[in-house]
Amino acid sequence: MLRKIGMYAVLSLIVVALTASVALAARTGATGNAQFKSVSITDNDDGTVNASGLITGLGSDLVTLQLITSGTAFVDCTNKGGQLVEAQAQTADASTTTAPQRPENGRLVFDFDSTAPTTLTSNPCPNGNWTPTITSIDITSATLNVIQNGETVLTYGPLNPQ
Image 1 (cartoon, rainbow, N blue to C red):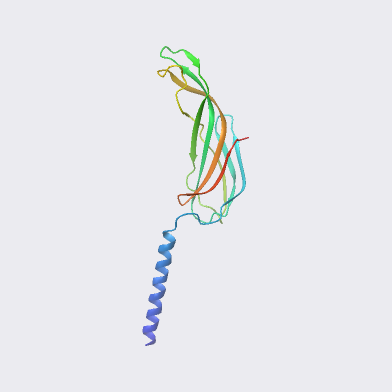
Image 2: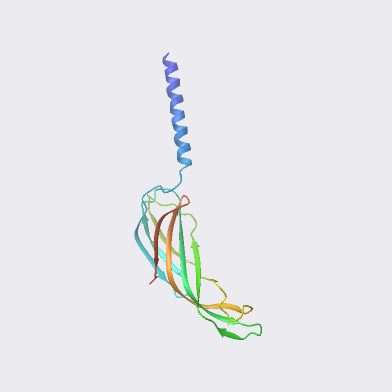
């Protein structure tokens, strides 16, 4: 009789353990209470933007950081004959995403550069057959997103980088 009760107890524990492991494996969404403890977003001379800082309250799941930048691109246009003409400034956007990173004790220290915007919203050249070339970019805004389990758990910005 006691052997039968012991067997039921063991089976019950196995069922509980399996249920808990399936529930943890299927977890989605934020696992902690993410907060920026410090953050700095700086405009670099080459049109890139640097983001650095410390995030706490992340739990242990992987984190991806996404830095979205917008800027005013100054453009030269080249016609089929090779003649250069300065065009009007245009809006340019870029997005950089880090590889997944594992927080340590719920904390993540980060420091990375975005790519410079290289895509124009439209062709600013006087003739659509001319080729636009970005000569310089003034960054106008940047937004930093913290993504965990496919969900944006924290956003910093948009702001004008220093």
